[in-house]
Image (tube, rainbow over all chains, first blue to last red; front, side):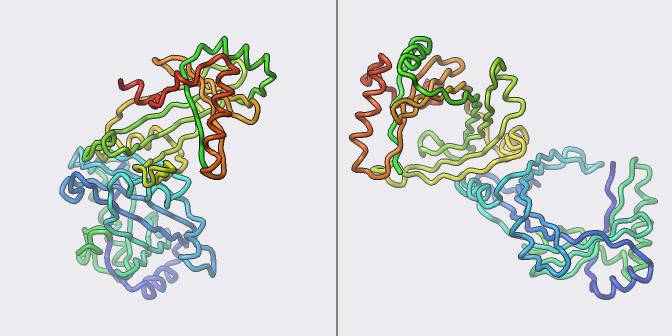
Amino acid sequence: MYEVEAKVAADHERVRRELDARDATAGETVVQEDTYFDAPHRDFAETDEALRVREQATVREGEAPGEALNGADSRVTYKGPLVDDESKTREEHETGVESGDELRAVLDGVGFTEAARVRKVRSYYALDGVTVTLDDVTNLGEYVEVELEVESEADIPDARERAYGVLRDLGLDPDDQLRTSYLGLLLE
Amino acid sequence: MYEVEAKVAADHERVRRELDARDATAGETVVQEDTYFDAPHRDFAETDEALRVREQATVREGEAPGEALNGADSRVTYKGPLVDDESKTREEHETGVESGDELRAVLDGVGFTEAARVRKVRSYYALDGVTVTLDDVTNLGEYVEVELEVESEADIPDARERAYGVLRDLGLDPDDQLRTSYLGLLLE
């Protein structure tokens, strides 16, 4: 399975109008707060690894995202370096945890330090078989991500064209594509 | 709250006879498998810290402890160095995790290594307001621990005498007391 995705900075109000005009299906809105950690013994930016605690909650109609986070589910994830550059395969381990606060305190205790927190509100839409995600990232701005999955590597070029087509339909330019993660953009 | 405890090596069959003769109340039996980790950047034995993943399950009548562990609850715990020598106070952080295996893989990914696994079957009894625990520790042997909690420091000497009294009632000698943890005994 391969994920093809493209992300651009974009004003959400305008994009939502285009999505409505095209009868895109609105999915749920979630708030995610990701805490990334620095290791005491190696530079994760250099080794291309990540240790993250994610808190995620569904945002109900009329609810403030910060409020939704009070009852959030927490998960810890380790992403190892690329083991296969071609397919972007990484070692990844993840599990749910009862308390994100306690897990952060455990990591802090053994010597990890918080590198950054990335909070975003994500609204999902489906349009022509492509997932369109409107990300409002705290202290960074509004972004739109289009994403689809394909089974085989041979399908990647076509999938990329479909993703770019959806971007263009929404009034966005695939040439504005950003390849840096939100964490990377925030640390810049 | 202070915990007063004493632990001695002891043959369980003999101790169980004494417990029965004294109408001790039998509690549940649990199996605990603790994985202790070494840090890549400091020596936890030297800094008096511990990072532990514990899997614990109740052992039902006629069930093998290894079998019970299949549906175990997992927790991760960090114990910091003593912050107050007098009261044995430590910084401690703990949370439940969905999968002990995945959490061990996360810790392995970021550079921690398994120092040891300690598996024990613990049977709890209550006798004269004191908790008596029969620990059968894999690759180590059979131990008995007596424990009680007191509210204030002033009550510690009396509590210690009560604990020692229970040990004597069970045919054990408080002078045989071990102050080393099972992890320490296994690593010796």
